[in-house]
Image (cartoon, rainbow, N blue to C red):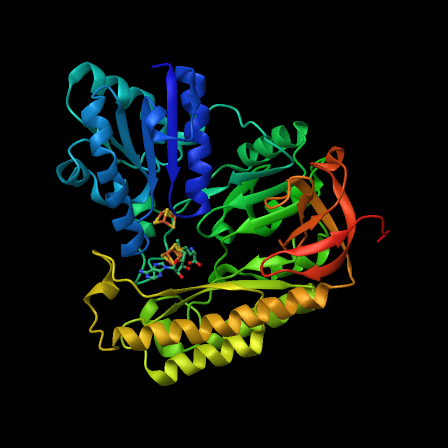
Amino acid sequence: MAGKVFIRTFGCQMNEYDSAKIAGLLEASEGMTGTDTPQDADLVVFNTCSVREKAQEKVFADLGLLKRLKRERPELMIAVGGCVASQEGRAIVHRAPHVDVVFGPQTLHRLPELLERRRAGGRPQVDVSFPEIEKFDRLPEPKASGASAFVSIMEGCSKFCSFCVVPYTRGREVSRPFDDVIAEIAALADQGVKDVTLLGQNVNAWRGAIDGEPADFAELLRYVAELDGIERIRYTTSHPREFTQRLIDAHADLPALSPQVHLPVQSGSDRVLAAMKRGYTALEYRSIIRRLRRARPDLSLISDFIVGFPGETAADFEATLALAAELDFDGSYVFIYSPRPGTPAAELADDTPAAEKVERLQRLSALLEAQALAASQAMVGSVQRVLVEGPSARRAEELAGRTANNRVVNFRGDAALVDRFVELRVTGVRSHTLRGELGHAA
Ligand code: SAM
Ligand code: SF4
Ligand code: F3S
């Protein structure tokens, strides 16, 4: 099926990664090219997210908008993948009968075959099974675009936090083999990639074998850091439960490892953490951060928080605020708890009024934003190593790059600098970006 594909991605970086793989797969197997409007497309793919109710409802609302297109052009194929697909399966076709194919995060490599069967057999095709790691063996070779790349090192999650759909939508934790991960990063480095982000729901749950010996995530990082051309390593997301001393030591030993760590805490109250089944206490979380800061004094810590979990009292929330104030985060994500069908927390009594939850969200977000702004302001005057990404979003004659702690810096410079590291002096702070100047030795 040559022609054009429009891919819309909802949700997290795992979905972003999968969408890039879907595009590569359709190009390799069908000769399809991308388009950025559905009106132009022969195939529309929605790669969906169901982590909160709003995310899921947005998918159905946007699918509704495609109904008219399908009526006008019945040959237009519509495919729904990702976590809503995984959770809802065939129910998607009942709710949105104009959908032709439903595929899951673990069956995306079967998309060409499902489309083919739909065209041949007439019936909508649904395959949201979990053939585990098979998908990686059936995807085209990685192709770099620019100096940064994402590499998935594990799939799924086995933690079963009481509020979360991910273990149900993406299946249990499965690690990609060491050799495959290293081969993929080395292939990307050969194509000019310098900055790699290792992806997974809990990357520090990665387990593998190196030369027949069992290996953990900390060891994997040490091997990635050895690869020629790789100068910056990030990973997301990690989990406090497996944040071992070995991993903290890797932060002390590996300069390529980004000082920005995304380590979701969710709550500062032990009572709430236990009800969430997170498997750690607030004290244990504090201890990890204290040791991480000792290893990397320039640590830039970001986190996820849920407010309004069933039964969260004003005192529980104050404990979260106190933890945030004490640990000094560098920006974070705050969500209001959203009950998800099929998860244990959805059965819990929840008597906090909605307005109270919104107020908690606002108070915590205001604190976290002020902390991030203060961290940006503290960077003014410093010299930062920045990977240049391309023209700046606002002014085409300027360039934009990223610091080690993941801030965008805009500056004047020659386009030949794109995809290279430069040293910039930070000269000012805008609301979400920095300004910088070239010509300063580190
Ligand atoms: N695996 C990561 C971890 O446990 O740290 C997080 C993955 S989850 C896709 C991203 C974030 O969404 C979570 O850290 C949590 O804050 C939030 N989240 C997940 N389920 C939620 C729910 N039912 N309501 C509100 N926020 C939720
Ligand atoms: Fe969801 Fe918890 Fe797994 Fe994170 S660790 S994906 S919050 S179940
Ligand atoms: Fe959403 Fe699935 Fe990611 S639920 S956040 S797309 S793992």
